[in-house]
Amino acid sequence: MVKHTATSVVTIDRFIIEQERMHPAATGQLSDILYDVALAAKLITNKVRRAGLVDILGALDSENVQGEIQQKLDVFANETIVKAMDHGGRLCAMASEEEPELIPIPEQFRCGNYVLAFDPLDGSSNIDVNVPVGTIFSVLRKITRGVRGELEDVLQPGRRQVAAGYIIYGSSTMLVYTTGHGVHGFTLDPSIGEFLLSHPDIRIPTRGRYLSVNDSYEQHWDENVKALMRRYRGLDGQQKAMSVRYVGSLVADFHRNLLGGGVFAYPSNTQSPNGKLRLLYECNPLAFVVQQAGGSATNGVQDIMDLAPTELHQRSPLYIGSKDDIETAREFLSRKVA
Ligand code: AHG
Ligand code: MN
Ligand code: MN
Image (cartoon, rainbow, N blue to C red; front, top):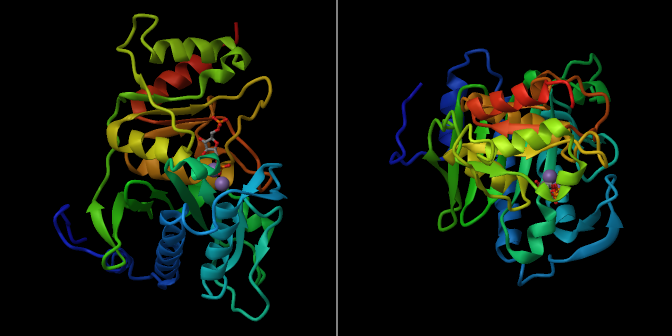
């Protein structure tokens, strides 16, 4: 594979082709999916960048399947991705946080061998206050025999992902993805409308500086979680205190920790025993990315990517980030609860 440095001017299209050439048996379908994700990202970023100026801010009077008020940008991002991806002939079905059921490929379009699960807009609560938001995506190979995709094609463990990544609409728009050969980051140059390789081979530090957790739920955590957070904060004298950084957009917190080292934690609590984050299109894709960057992700007991999904929108507790810090989490959370 061609070794690029951060100064090489490499477009994402060229990078995708170079990665495809590493697999003589590749059909090009996965490459085409990644192109389409990059296109959808440009369309969404165009709206996000002008969110204060066009009628895209604010909430609708509709709720999604999660019972959350949908933001206009949630719906726009969802429709943009579905329309960018439904006719290319590479997918046989899609699953979105914003749609209760599996999204079939319209009858008039050919089906392909992959399924896409995605969170079209992550961090919705931050849209109106100009805090970074993101899109998260996961690609799986079809496993059922028919032409059209079925629920079983999406309900696969994260280990079976063939590609995963996210877009962060922050101070710049970045697309970060993996196909199992490392993690690579591309920054959108709006003057030419191209994603350019800016972060080749991202590696997460084995021990982190940052702790991302919403400790307003502390009263609802069990004793092991409380002890773990005391450890991360250096309150038990066993390690240096981690700086707490929590913006409320998983993609933004995850991205900062991926580059600088750290842990994002969304523990289970008595109010929501499975935490809040969704396994298929938030936990699994980011677990694949972090594992490929040298980190890890657990629900406290098992590796996230070993969990066998049973429902489209099922939730999972999530501890994700620097390898040694996640090892600490496993050690604390596997103890008998006091
Ligand atoms: P989404 O906007 O896609 O529903 O995701 C929001 C998630 C995630 O982005 C963030 O880390 C978490 O919700 C914040 O939850 P709390 O407000 O409960 O901390
Ligand atoms: Mn989300
Ligand atoms: Mn969302």
